[in-house]
Image (cartoon, rainbow, N blue to C red; front, side, top):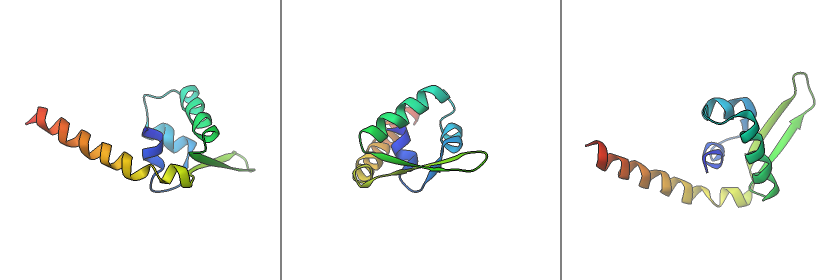
Length: 85
């Protein structure tokens, strides 16, 4: 869910995803990205340059999940707010 959430608004490079999710190892992030690509939720575009650049973005199917992800995020914020007040 976190990957999809970070891709909801724009194209994101692998390195940026690593910075956005510092607790995820490179191996785990790569594995999750491959699974999401296999499931048709995201696509990746490889640019043949040095250093190699890879951009990730949501497919139509992935974009269809954005309202659900944003609703879950809002629900979580309200729920956490109950415990911090």
